[in-house]
Image (cartoon, rainbow, N blue to C red; front, side, top):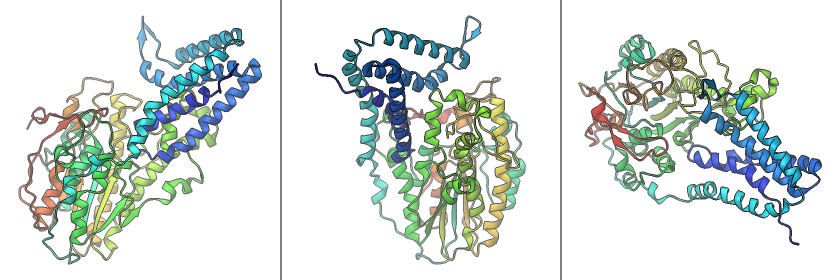
Amino acid sequence: MRRSWILHPFLLSVFPVASLLARNVSQIPTSEAARSAFACLAVAAVVLLVSRVALKDWHAAAALASLALLLFFSYGHIYNEIEGQVLAGLTVGRHRFLAGLWAFLLLAGAAWIWRSRGTLHRWTGPLNLIAAALLILPLATLLLAAAPDQRARRTSATAAVTPQSTPGQDLPDIYFIVLDGYARQDILESVHGLDNLRFVEGLAARGFTVPERSRSNYPNTALSLATALNLDYLPAILPDLDPQSRDLSPLQQAIVDSRARRLAEDLGYQIVAFASGYRPSEWTDADVYLQPDAQGAAARGMSAPLTPFEGMLLESTAARLLLEANALLPASVRLGLDAPYQAHRARIDYALDGLGQIAARPEPTFTFAHLIIPHPPFVFGPDGQPLAHSTAYTLGDTPFDGSRQEYSRRYTDQIVYLNARLLTALDQIQSHSSIPPIILILSDHGSGATPLPGPTPPVNYIEERFANFTALSLPGCAPAPLPPHLSPVNTLRLVFSSCFGQDYPLLEDRSYLSSYVHPYDLRDVTDQLGD
């Protein structure tokens, strides 16, 4: 009788890695998942061997191993769905209930497998097919993402650029600084209880103009950056995008190989970029790419800290039980879990320190700095002190584990710290520049507190999310007055038109809503934002 190869425990062990990578392929390098895949395969092998010792039968051991792996890797996903849920007056969305249920399912399954162990060889082939079928979709997604995407060819990439100034001649440095998720002054006060007037006045004293009703074009970072850096809306930048597509790789290409960057290069600028930790905004091919040593790992004395991908994977499994009880974990494990947060802190501090040093370069520079602050994860207190974390590292807004009040407190603490550091950096930039520099400070979108639990918010999601912050210093070439609703699509249009004689008339400031699941399925919500 022909026996089937035992493959399903190993296929099931790599499915969570492939699935998580496929959902985040445009933001996470494929290579970052390799260590996770090897670890999961090793775990599958150990579980299979232990089961074989207990059951004395390879096929029964494989069935038990697959059951254990399925329960382990599904735990975090199920817990996310039921967390805090109440049934008949009892809060069932707690670890004590789900962990107990999972333990019962494992024991009941093991008992059935023990009784049936003589016949389970017949299940091995079908289980292999089922496990292989599960891998088809994520692997297909990864293969498509790895293939060249012709849709990423932008009409603007071939547009001729005619500089109005001689390359390299007495050009002012340009700083394009993106503060991720920084809310407008009125929203900071009404939603988060922070009066940010002192910071705005500090900017004004340094020659900045702050439009009072600025608003973002999109609620998503990649969409907003692509539009700002290409001086146009998405339909003009990427006309062939499928509204149902989830692939962010065309946006990444549009951000890295943007019209603004090409214009600056043709004018004679050297491109300088800081590491962001967000793959779509990483200009690693810039003339000067700046990042902290090993993303801060060397300072921690760790040769192989957990990556953000590994943290997300762990949180989706039963290891979440340990993550949320991290005070009980060995110090080395806690340090590994906190490593991505420390690297995040290191990138932000490094950029804030480094911005003030760019002016010392002899050549004219176009500097791009995307700082993921005050957006979560919250890693700074108001004086810059590090914060402890009980969950795996993520750049998302919605995974925040707390109330709206807690979000606002941590969010505004980061703004207080950022404001002080940024004003210092601006003083250094302006004092060290031989020619008054052009400085653009804007946020890609507003804050994200509204969906969180808490009292009825003073504004709705759209009003909060699209209320971005903008501040411009255009010495000698600023048009007066600036449009009160100035949006990211028009910031660099102002610069290249007013300061360099390019023909970029301002577009109508419009705002479009889409979901993270379908980022290109856009709906115009401009009329819902008021005056």
